[in-house]
Image 1 (cartoon, rainbow over the protein chains, first blue to last red):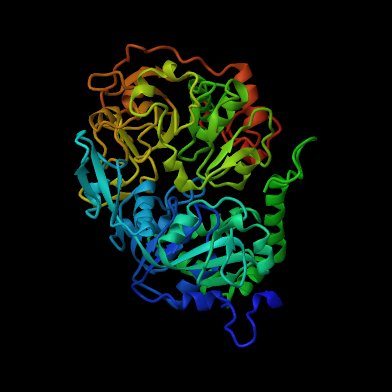
Image 2 (cartoon, chains in turn cyan, yellow):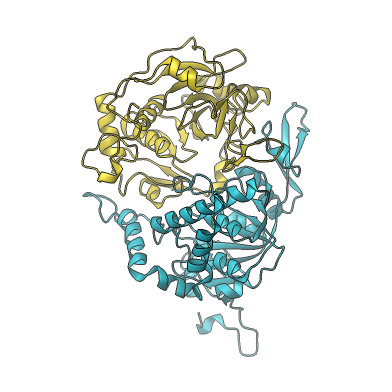
Amino acid sequence: MTAADERGPAGRPARKEVVVTAAEAAARVSDGMTIIVGGFVTANHPMPVVRELIKRGVGDLTVIGSATAGLEIDLLIGAGCVRKLIAPYVGAELYAPIGNCFRAAAENKEIEIWECSEYILYAGLQARAMGQEFMAWRGGVGTSIPELNKDLVVFQSPLGDGKEYLAVPAIGADWGFIHVGWADAYGNGQHVGARFGDRILARAADRVAVCAERLVPNSYIRRNPVMTSIPYADMVIEAPFGSHPYAAHGFYAEDAEHIQAYVAASAAYRKGDRAAFRAYLDEWVTGPEDHDAYLEKVGIRRLLELEREYAGVSLGRHAPEGWPDAQI
Amino acid sequence: MTQTRWSWKEMMAIFFARQIEDGDTLCSGAHTEISFCAAMLAQKSHAPNLRLQLGGTGYLCNLAGRPVLGGVPKTSVDYRIAQWAEAYFDHPETFFFYGPPGGGRRYYEDRSAFAGHNGYFFADHFFVGGLQVDYHGNVNLIGLGADGAFTMRGPGSVGIGDVITVRNMFVFMTAHDPRRFVPKVDYISTMGPSGWREKQFPGNGPQWIVSPLGVFDFTGEGMTARLRGVFPGHTEDEVAGATGFPVARSELFGEIEPPTAEELALLREQVDVNGVLGGIPGGRPPGLAEREGAGA
């Protein structure tokens, strides 16, 4: 990264390096901002930043989740950071069909919900990324979604065929937080495995920060520029196991036991017992000093197990004869 | 009702698999172990050319002749899905690949005209879960309540209102009672088939409602729900008592064949290797071998 060929001749400015800590990244978010959190259900969430936001007590946020947002959003809601939610789903499928804090907050009118569906979300992000005022989309016509979300405007096709469309206004954000496999110090992020909706989420944000499993030299990025899915990130946070307790494609499996413990704490929250949820926050969010301390608490044995579980399937270590060697 | 030698989840998965033809396109949609196993079973049994987007990761998968390592995927982004992938696209691109062969309604009205066509589109089959489903096939994932207030907030509509080119939507309900099978849903996440025609969507939308008890089609007047059959071990009276809208027989009402020995063997030995459907154990871990709901 400090290779001589990346420096200009003496006296000229050097290229800007953007590596920060998760705490420094979270400090750029202030009350009332809009943030995007990448990943998908139980994979690839930028958890060190999520935890630091809660630790800082940031509030009144508008939070844009992924097209199938997971419990990272539920956690932000339960911790009281969220005023308005933009996401077509919050939960963790078989682990938790509906996010418990999300459900409680919606039922108690503690958050505003921008009702949408997957492509309505993407259409809004896409409009922002393209610099248009809106995108037209037929999905959602005839449903309750445009009745619940007055920002969506039903209009007749200008082609005269009598078909109805939704005008989905542009959705932008102050910051987008995205988990990637590796990134260099200049803000080139590369996914290692599935990218879900992360690229469009990043493109709709005014500024982007990536949490990278590995910080790598620029030469490593240049080996395969096609893989650079999030270029020009404004901040890079080095965070091994940065999606824990969720999976990171290319690296490790989700921590089912930890997720189940979170689901149990949040289920108690929904039923009015906030003590168990506060205990979870104390233990796993506000307690550990930083991401390294968090990982220390999870423990090296558990983390290695999650790596092995991933490798066991994805690298075919337990595969029958003739199974391909690598499946990343 | 009689005791059966398979679980209700196995029966549902096998029923779904039977509806999937070789060469169809399928996006598994909502994640449950039932819909995943159904798609996997179809591809491993009679549909090796099934064009299968398994889960929300954007992996296009072929499992024909391939083992299931690490068990049935637990979520729609489970990394285990990658073991069968031959192609990948980002999730938003799912929505860019929607157009049916020929455009418009032609494919849905005469599939035979497109026999030689590439035919890759989204999708012949799609699974939709719901908090509620009604007589017209409207499905609700938004919540219970009225006027934007929720006595019970659901998970959200995900993409089920977006998939307007789907030829056949399986609405599947994992429990069957009058709170879930209602005359009219509180909120609509995706419309029933008459709504799809009224709004001139390209696809057909919901064609089935499938529950642990039996199956509805939409052959009633105005494309309303009619009972197509009951699963072995269950009765029409039982379905009528558990349904909040009128239950009448479809003209196509018929017996639903129980799982064959071959279907069950393939499902248990090569698909549901960790027993998540709760079938009869065959060397499974003890905790996963409970006969959940079997014939009861």
